[in-house]
Amino acid sequence: MTVKAMGWAHSFPVSGGVRAGRRWTQEHLASLPWAAQDPETVDAIVLTVSELLTNAHVHAHSDAQLVLTWDGDCLHINVHDEDPTLPRPRDADNDAVSGRGVSIVQALADTWSMQCQQHGKTVTACFRPARSTGSQDRDEDSRGGKHHEGDER
Image (cartoon, rainbow, N blue to C red; front, side, top):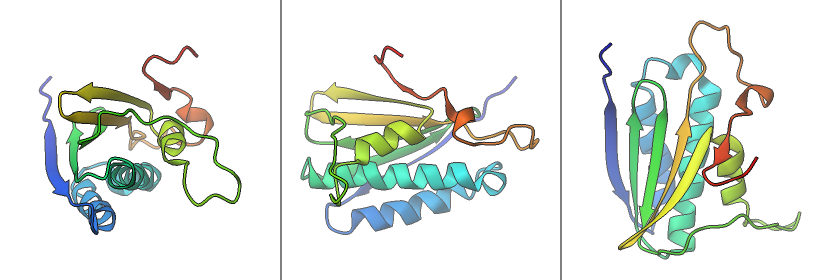
């Protein structure tokens, strides 16, 4: 079996990078054969990109390098910023307009992880699209495999 991987990389500046990152991601996802049949996964990926870019800009005060990779099974999102501090879930008040980014990524991604590096950190999220056969509906119960590496669930 031959695996054809494809990927894209782009840097997004602190000023105006989130909107551009969402648009850039949507354009690249449209080239994947499963995207039209699985709009819920596409939406989850775009929202995750938005949250990760926002975290890089707001908390790391850094430009963000976004890499999307499709390996035939999983769409990997990697966002690198210059701050080595790892993000952590927070309990945001109901009225708060921020503070939910990590929790959103955790809820949407099939798997996710964080890694400190010499110059910053990279947050990675993996999304496995539903098969185009229509036999697997994507709902909250079918996404039960999501976890953060290191979680004991």
